[in-house]
Amino acid sequence: MKNKTTLTSGIKKLTLFIVILFIGLNVLAQDTLHLVYHHTQIKPHDTTEVKIDNWLKKLNGKHQDVNVIAYYHKLEFKKFSQERCDELFLILNRKARAALTIESIGPKKGEDSQRTTVDIIYKPTINLAEVAAAKKAEEEKAKAEAEAEKKANAEKKEKEKAEKAEKDRIEKEKKDAEKAEKDKIEKAEKEKKDAEKAEKDKIEKAEKEKKDAEKEMTEKAEKEKKDAEKGEKEKKEDVKEKVEKEKKESKKEEEVKEEKKEKAEKVKKESKKDEEVKEEKKEKAEKEKKSKKDSDKK
Image 1 (spheres, rainbow, N blue to C red):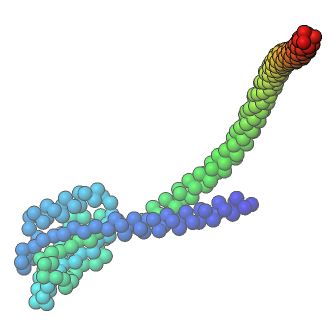
Image 2: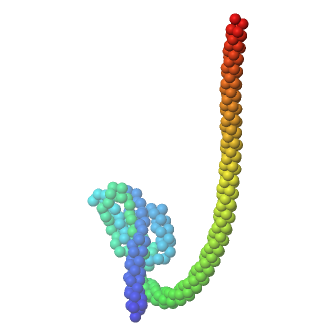
Image 3: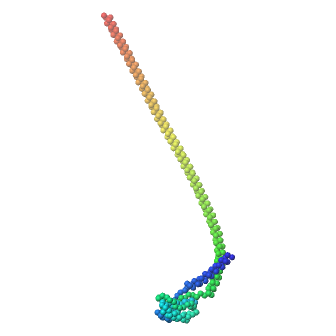
């Protein structure tokens, strides 16, 4: 029902548009044939008549509504303009009575430059029967076009629906394929990352074990070096102590020897002293003996 109302409204608008278009085209189709006369000349020159004949041929039998204006610049020249109009009226009726409808003809005050000019203003005649026929044809055409458009719209909707369903199916398949590909890539990436992590952990573990072993070896070597240095030091200290001890013992022995020597010297001195005492005693005894002997001699 809504579509029918819309169609009727559309046809009415189209009809109005056609009438306006015919009138508009008629107005737009208006044109002017300019005829030039010599000063106060009444009858058109032969060249002017040729110009009129050529114009009538150009109309190609199409009926025209005509308005004829003969210009004058001063009032005293108005009668010449009127006579030109009268003469031109006879010529037009003689040459093309059936093709022309003279709506108006007469003089009109104009500019000085227009005083020798006569204008035939013409436009195609509006044929109401043709307008009605055109209107009916356009209505039928509009109705047929509306039916065709309705059918085309229905087909278009069905086509769009089918295309949308196909597009949705393709999009779904595409999304499913993309998701599957994405999942595959993500799985591959995860496996790759896990493998890389496992390899990294393995390398790090090997590096740690290597570092621990190197550290242990270094510490062991350092310990052995320190123990060796300590042993060497202790050995040196023992040797030093032994040397010092031997030195001390040697010194002590020297001291003992010195002491013994001193003691021997002392004994020797005492022995010498005893010898001296003995010598003294011997000398004294000798002396006493001699003294006694001398005494006895006396």
